[in-house]
Length: 549
Image (cartoon, rainbow, N blue to C red; front, side):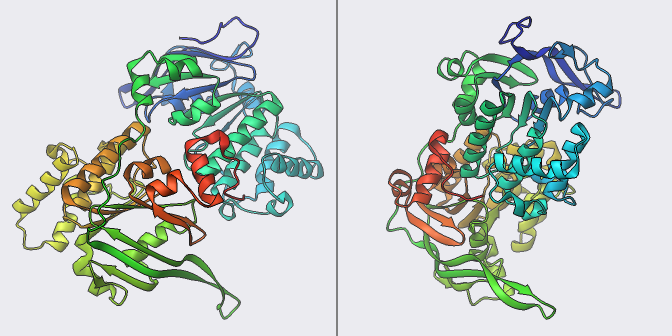
């Protein structure tokens, strides 16, 4: 279905009846199935759907960036200013790429060359397409960095990607994309890996640059909250098909297709468990400090410290959730690792009134089964060489050696059933499961040991919105069933609100604000917390004051 008339002179890009198939051996799989949409000059069209829906494959097809010949186009045309890019010679496609149509990707760290400076990477594009001299290239690079909001750009010319923050890296990617004043910018999940305040800044930057340069934009995302504020029209994709398209307002106020309604209802909902003031303390910490030394010189003397956690105190009760929020680098994960005694720290830590701060690593071992962790990346945290039965049962082999093989297998099956997975799948391997299923496996690995405290480190940030909601419901159900204490670390404040009774807001290792979830979300006292809330719940009102790039 198409949202514009193909013959309209105002149409910049027209995708007609496009199909994409991938071939392996003698098998073919259709990833995109006869889709059509148009993008007018100066218009932003959002391509929305969950992982595997075909969004990115459709976008990569525009610039012929798919792995040919293992990918093919059984049908379709991609008309850019009337010329079909699919049938155009490679020389013409090279002229279009980076000149008329450019693309920015989800993860700038993997898209930027780690061995080249910022100046080298941007000026390379100018040399390639405009053949300009080095002095003029440097002037234009500085102008581009200033346009994308990088402060003191002269000091960043010699920087390498690892020396920049996530937001700065994405700004460099945008500068590279804008170097040749493209007519169409394709943005493939450009804010998914960023904190909420940085996300708001990048979206505001893209909106401003789009209007300033008169660009059209194809914006790919699974986050409907962004789409509502950002796009003129929306195309909803699932299973390789566009199932609904229309003006953004119409899609949000009067969705027609069941899948669109499913996406709109997918945000994490519900309330955290009721407050239990009389519940016993599971975890208590006083004046926790984690300082990393900065060493210089031939003798490697300590000249300063990075204060990752600087004097933080907390209490966490049975059956309750303490949310720890803040931007990347604020010290959230370091705090969690310190509480688990997985890194060295100063201060006092008590687990069910047992002092942990004086225990050695070996002395901590009897308590490990009661203190478990679920990590952010459900694929990276599961060994690809182990079956699900081995992954979930590994902890039992260490902490419950008296169990027979049969009893251990029964416990594994029960843990998988408890997290909503079919126990008969336990002989499969991680790559055979979806992202949401892999995170359920990671949760089952923690739950099989019957813990009393679970550290959840960004457990939903790598998941689609609807899968996030399912995992939040699962965590809430497990907490109620087993009276678990959760330390929930996240920069996604919508998820935190659905789970947390109390919240700590961190910045640069320090507590900015601490209190009940209602106090933090409804009556924040500091400017930093208010900026976080604005960025998370109302992107238009987030001016970026919370963070300095």
